[in-house]
Image 1: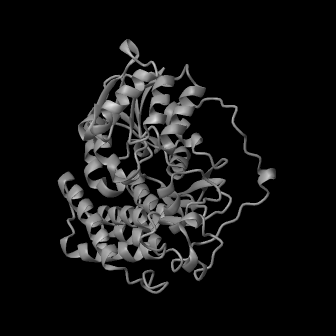
Image 2: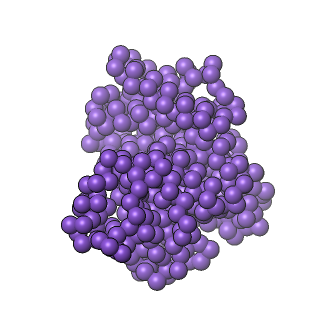
Image 3: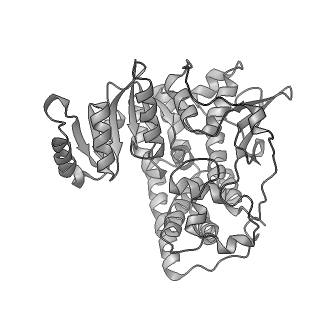
Length: 415
C-alpha cells in the first residue's frame, strides 16, 4: 500500500486525488492533508481518510478546525496532528510516513511546500506547474541532490511522460534533471482552445468572467480555467515541459485540438510520433502518478474513437492569444523572468476574477511587469531571489491596476 500526502486537498486536484484513494482503498492510504479555508470540506475529508497530520495555510483557523473536528466526532486517537502556517505546510509536505506527495496547491504558493517534500526525499506527483515555472533553476538541483522522483500530473506532461515510458530514455525523463532527453526531437502540447476557442478577436471585447470560467471540455478551478481561455495555461506548460524534458523552446509546440482526446505527442529522432489518448478526465493522469510504475484496472469510461468521430487540429493565433507569446518570451529569457511573468499572471487573473480589469487587460499588465523587470533580470537566481521578484511582480500589477490599465491594441504584444 502506498502512503500519500495531498497538498491542496480541497481544490480540484486534491478532491480528485482523494476520490481515487476511496476507489482503491487497498492501494492507497492518505497520511497528510493541507488546505486553505474550506474547513467544511476538509473536516469531511478527515472523517473519511483519517490522516495523521492536517495543515492549514492560515494558522489562525486552527482553533476553528479543531472545534469542527471535535463536533464531527474526530477526537482522541482518531484526531490528526494539526499544524498551520508556512511551517505547518512544510511539515505536512515532508511527513515521514508518506511515500508520494501530490502537489495540488494552486500557484506559486505551492513552491515552498514542494521544495520541503523534495528536500525530504519524497517522490512527487506534480500538479503545481508554477513550482518549475517560477523556480526551475532552484528546483532541479534540489531534485538531483535528494534523489526525489518527479511524476507530472498535468494531463499534457503525463502524456509525454507515458509516451517516453516506451523508449530507452524513460529514466532520464522520470528524474526530471533538465538534461535533454536523447532521441526526443519535438514535443507537441495539445490545447482545447479554452472557453474562447470559437470566438473572434473582436468578440473578446465583450468577454465576461462567467464566459472565461466556462470550460468546454475540462472540469478545473477558476484560475486555471481563465488561463486556459487566454492560452497562458499552455504557455506555462511549455516552460514546464522545458524543465521536465530538457528540450529548448524551439522544439516545444502548441496545437489547438478541440476534442481534447490526444493529450500530447512526442516526435522521435526517426520522425515517428507517439501520442497518448483518453477522455478529458484529470483522474487518469493523477491515477498514473499514484500507481506508477504499475497501472491499475479501472471501471472508468473507455475511449471509443468511433464515438469521438473526428480529431481536428489547428495552429493557435498569436494575435488572439498574446499570453502564449509572453510565456514563450519569458521562458526564453530565463532566470527570474518566468517567475515575474507567472506572478504577474496570477495577480492579473485575480484582478479579472474580481472584475477590476477586463479579460483583454491581462496580457497588457503581464507584459508591463516583464518589461519593467528586464534591467533587473537575474540569470542564476536563488530561492530568495525567486520569492522576492514574485512579490515585486504582484505589487507591480496591483499598482498598475489601481492607476488604470491602458490596453494595447489586439496583436500588438504578439508583434
